Length: 441
Ligand code: ATP
Ligand code: MG
Image 1 (cartoon, protein in one colour):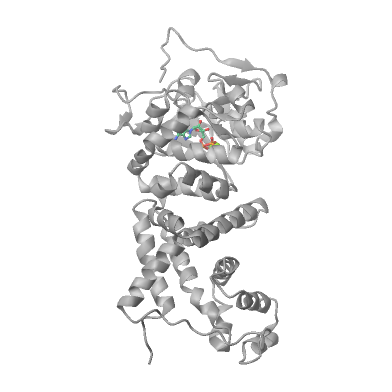
Image 2: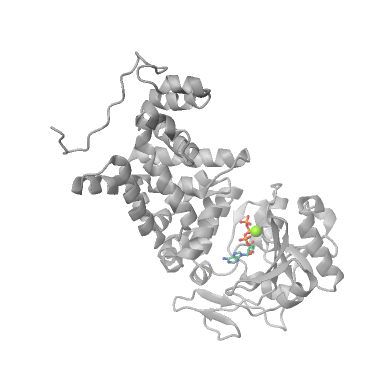
């Protein structure tokens, strides 16, 4: 990777305001406040990364990153609503209500062979820490892709382009800054970022980046599980989950994140359909600005492995279907933690949602009625509807659960009383499935 020396500093192409489409209207008022305050205090202040890239593409940027030559302590001194975070990368977070503006001090790029101030690499070349500050023309080379290395200058609203990002945005190409092998070795998460950006932005991944990804994909195994949860959220909760999933499978990266799921997807068309449908639904919900929770997709991804494990448990020991699913969820989520650390606030509800599935088969009596009041009913119902759409659950029974939600208390009582179901006559009482091999006779 090129390192700028002081004598031979690369010069940026400066695109003046009239020649580009990033306007202050694209930038959140909070981000503008931070930019102006830094600028008025005599520091350089640039919007950089996704904010500039997305605005150029006519997308609505949601998250704003700022680059400055002020040190983290100097940033903190300027903003009372500011907190310094991170050891790997020391950053300032300036908070405005729920919005957080990330302010990063320009850093110098360093490579794994150099011993340099507060920078640390592991044996594979992975960057463990990077806290050597520099100027903007150092900072640019440590960014991942050219489209992410465009700097919007609040001083005169121009864009500084060192790496040819403007042209690559225009051509919708995802191009790595520097040598892809080295850059993926420094941080294998960049492979997931490549997939995510190409899905979200509809960019073609440059050939050399693509072949480097295929070659280096096992490096993803060195990434700590804690870091992968953040990336999981960005990949699957940001409105482009379905496309990201297809590409992760295409580049054989998905199996490095969800090994058992990947195996099950190869074995079962039905499961693949189920996962795809769930991802499409999630994207639709994001587009409609409806609430989403990662526990739902986690449950979807782990559904086939959980069922398999539940079957094993039932073959060993006598227990209810629901119990076996609950125990299996615990086991499978536990295994998954070693790859992606999923906070317990998500695994617990996931387990409840999964264990509730057999209860949808009982649609009469108090027990059936009580299910409607369960705090996980809505998620479990959505999950059941997906199963029904994939032929894994009786569609008439699914319809029953849809209908009863719109009924008043008296109507519900009637619906759940024996022989008084909307579909009575058409279908018989759902029989509990017997576990294979188990005999009640
Ligand atoms: P989005 O916010 O839409 O996910 P983004 O490009 O803003 O996209 P962030 O994770 O917010 O992504 O990071 C901001 C910028 O920081 C990036 O545009 C890139 O320049 C740089 N960056 C972030 N992560 C890395 C990384 N792992 N390696 C190199 N540069 C990175
Ligand atoms: Mg960002």
